[in-house]
Length: 414
Image (cartoon, rainbow, N blue to C red):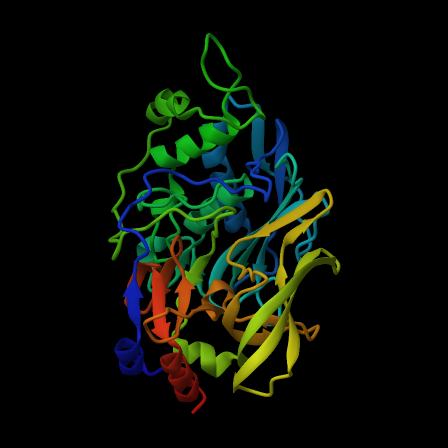
């Protein structure tokens, strides 16, 4: 790691001085909010095997508590969230109608991505936004975990992380500008603030799952709509622990939907370069959604410049998620490429030999060519919280001269 070089090269810029003041919900490409139909939604635990420091029975109690936290807010909505009595065997995500929670223990696991503490795979119907399946994975290959944060050293609190991920599993994205909220994208070691819901989280639940209308009240259950006022009483009834507000280093701005939702462990530019199989600058010429076996999106990239590694003239870059016919898959933290973009990509190769962007959104830089300035790479991490060796900080819009990116690649490969 060459911190002084990074500090010298990196300019952190914000696109807007405004700060969003509310929750965010995930949506399909057609604008439909992602939500479950009224009824029972059960999550099956596949937590055995798990990290040595985590007792399986105690972890189940934590999961029950996390589900109960959301159920308290959903009590009058017609949606019943719970933990299934019987466990399951751990397996990669699959849109099979069985909602699972599991550990990633192996760096080669297909659901793991370097730098992501936890992520949620959500299958949905694109036209209606109705959820069909949600699988949660927590990374114990790179990170250590605890259930007793009172004695925490540098571990991550399982109950906070799981409560946060279950929020994604019911359709919520990040709470932008609300560091006290469970759905704020925190990733700080030993932090416990996401165990309890804040008013902003409750407003998000109301937007997706407002109880049936009564005397001109909230929108009907199962039909997402404006219902922020309906949770004012619920906020008082549920209550919550007063929590330390995390310091935010810069103003956050609203994300385009579907919003990103990963909890990220910050990867320095030199770290990305050192870990990458190849680093390329190129143009995205086409994207195609495929079933292999779940929904994946392939982006065809014509390589204009090889910055590191052995680069072909053209390659396919794969990511989890996409929409095809009546099926959709949203995966938090994935780097989505758009046809027509010029990009710099830090790439890894998975065990099936597919090229993927390393570190999720952290390995994607979009090239901009201002008329009167040097060519720059832009990486947008707004809406993410980055866990660093100095604590958590808000992700920002980062702008780096293309020549400086080239220099960090060379430095990281030394």
